[in-house]
Length: 178
Image (cartoon, rainbow, N blue to C red):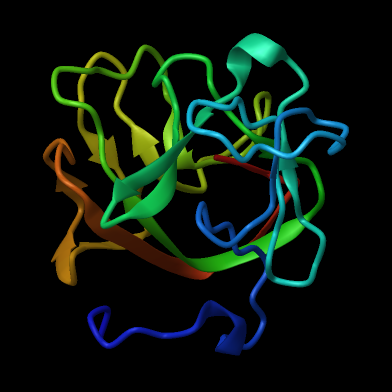
């Protein structure tokens, strides 16, 4: 069950593991200046899976910010809900994904952004896509989705912190965007 707790590095076939507390975060996409202070921009976020699937953002205005001791005394990355994204263009296979997420109250998705999608210009949805003009997330057809362990397809705004997970037939993608 999602409440039991599983160490991500114990999952066979793990492709990507991003952790705002444990992963090394960088202010720049070249990964030369560490992001360590509250409100530092995050231009690169290191993958802990051992596969080197780090996500980056070369454009300074499109970087999320590091927020220290934000949730249960742990760090988080804050995305603006508009242009902040981190991208990896390496091929990955996704079958199951987990995210701990919270959406700011009163915000809506300007486009089809999400928690885990393919990079811009890609042909298909991955998981957890924001429904344009609303504050709802949608998991897409053919996906099984859970919020805090409860099965759902389309779910209300996540204005408090939740564990969001989804499963689909393992599919290879030309990268990921968070």
